Length: 294
Image 1: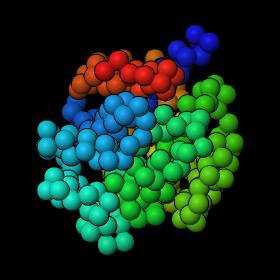
Image 2 (image 1 turned 90 degrees about the vertical axis):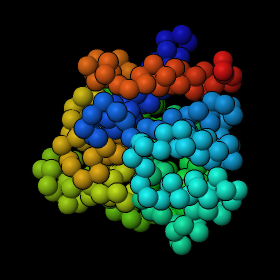
Image 3 (image 1 turned 60 degrees about the horizontal axis):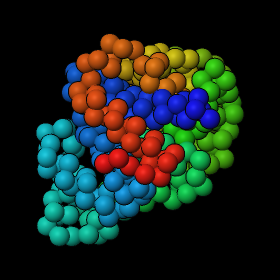
């Protein structure tokens, strides 16, 4: 049992640190961006609430944004958080900002802690959707967050040396509920079988800010490689929305390979490394023991 819980702890830490490492390297420096800042907010809320509480998570997002508004947030979230700060409910704000909802990757980029916390939980879809809805209400934005969360969850359950790519894709396909993502998964299977070149991968899967053009290529970056380092180097080479694609790839690869497999030189220079590691440990503790030391 001890070995099993230690393995799980390594995967929790690996996913959070992997997100931050991918984000920082993708942004071209040692500082992370809004991708990691919001991932930290998701983890903090899960820890402090002992589980998912949408109202609390929205408040944490607002608090963290105003503490560090310079993290590189896109134009949408600051306006959303400003409306929340003025007293409007998060339930009304996102739809007001984007009629029909946003299908950007902003909710998928931060979702790793929910994939970890709900890796063995049938409520993963519901919780991932609810967390997305705080800022991204379009079905394709929410489904991107769900798919990314489920990829993290499957990676937690996967022993890296026993990764079955076809089975991983099959389970993703059975879980997803929209045709846009089903088509991307079908393309992914074909590209993996053909060992396709990067230009073809980008042409089929995309590398831009829409969730359906960045979540699939992040999953592909994980499945097409066999070590954390190779997964991330591949993601970094794809261009486009580089920091977010690398952050999401790092989240999945970290959940599979564990923190020990992340190169030391990438971890040693990581901003706020000790806090992110501690947060991963606290999230793991809440998951396995149902309590926090905060």
